Image 1 (tube, rainbow, N blue to C red):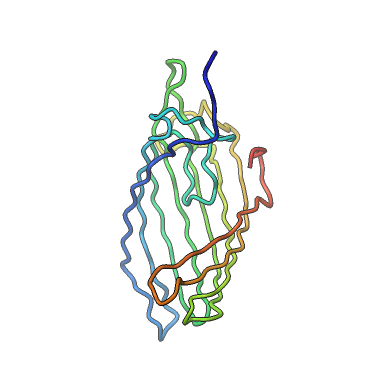
Image 2 (cartoon, rainbow, N blue to C red; image 1 turned 90 degrees about the vertical axis):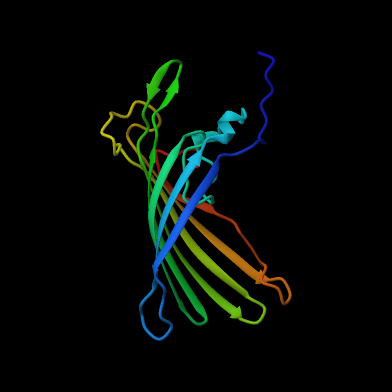
Length: 193
């Protein structure tokens, strides 16, 4: 067809709002509680970027949404620092607006993302530490709007990944660098993971 396909291009654009009604108390077991809202616009689809295998941007982009969909996410996160450790967890529910394919309205299942992470700061002055994160993505067999699913994985799916990380602070600045590799360790109906 003369059309060239590459692995590069503009991705989807996320706009997120976070509100922290409870800030952790360092002298108690009370963690921070954060409410999370996000809207994703399909700028990748609008610019002609091809969908990645499986239809999702990498699971490391959190919360994960279907590539090329208008999506709305609500979530709750907690965080607790117990020097020299940091614990974080979150659960996110994503609803994708109806789409279209070949003139037909398409409905995909809603998504649930979860994450639990642990960080150990070895050198507080240099901000050097390591971490381990467990991330999951679950494709549900229903939609919040009640429509019957007619696209995507109709029978649902699950993907579980683990990500070891290293982080450090650049000199005496407030800039922090981090790197990690997310490895898929288990899944159901998610061969492309």
